[in-house]
Image 1 (cartoon, helix red, strand yellow):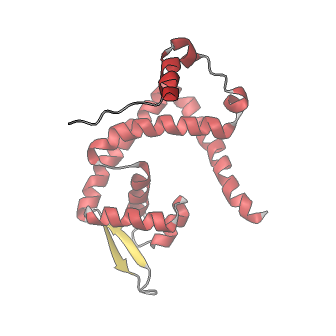
Image 2: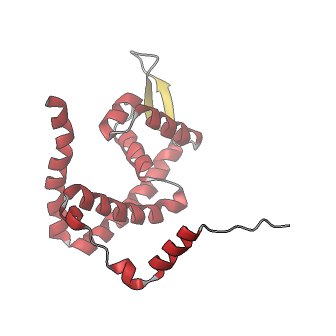
Length: 173
């Protein structure tokens, strides 16, 4: 016998209200649309949604691609340096490296000067995958260029890097 599931009345009412097209288009975001953080987050969500759809078949997420790219370009870096460079919590990075290692994409080796630290490098399989990922990433980026236009796209990097640099400025205050 199957258990019957029921929705709370409040949830039914909310779903009914949201089903009205006028309700979905009449949201006032107030000052949010004029806040850099809010607009950046919305843009990030849109970019990541496209990224996820393109990288899904290879089971790669944006953070994993970033980690693999940094390892590819800087073989031998420690987990700590990569975590710091990418702004990833060390415990989260360790779990991601564990998963990439299980997949046979990354190799850990003790460093010469500190056996507690691990130098990271790509495996042969990791290098092959990176060639595919870079092609997919270039296609993904080209979709953004096509949407914005080359001039606007090129003009985004300097102000975004300046905003990102604010993170380092906080430490000096």
